[in-house]
Amino acid sequence: MKRHLICAAVVACLASHAFARDSVENYPVTPALVSEPGKVGDDIPLYFAGQKHPVVVKSFGEFATNKKTNAFGKSDETACQHVFLSAVIELQDRARKEGGNAVINIKSNYKNEVRESATEFTCGAGAVIAGVALKGDVVTLKK
Image (cartoon, rainbow, N blue to C red; front, side):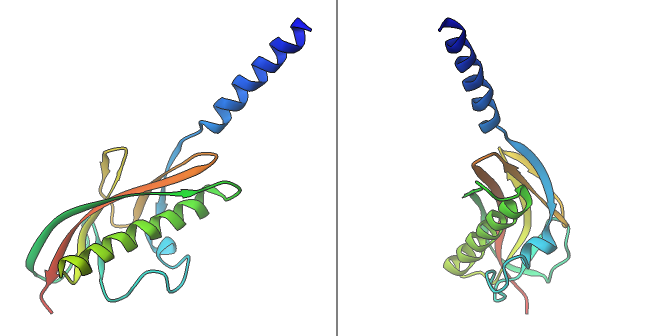
């Protein structure tokens, strides 16, 4: 009986470590933006860190997102693309609310670790949840 209890305790410990997985990876922006067609609006352009954009006429400040999604039964890439879209949409919604017409200088900010890239975003994925944190500047660009 004692042996069964010890085995059960070991299995429980190993299982809890499996669910605590937090893989942090970088994924390409372009395929993620088109992974769910029609989801991201085209009325608010997005410019990631380092990308050229028209002249800024007015700045409304820097805004951040921190989105999570259910990753259970999904590949890390699929879950990360989905939650990335949610983060981007939140930035676009903020631009609309503030009266801006674009979001520029978009950077990953996963666990407060800033990563600037025009081509990749950072995502943390576990057995159950995936998350993306972004920040960007809401602006009005010269037309």
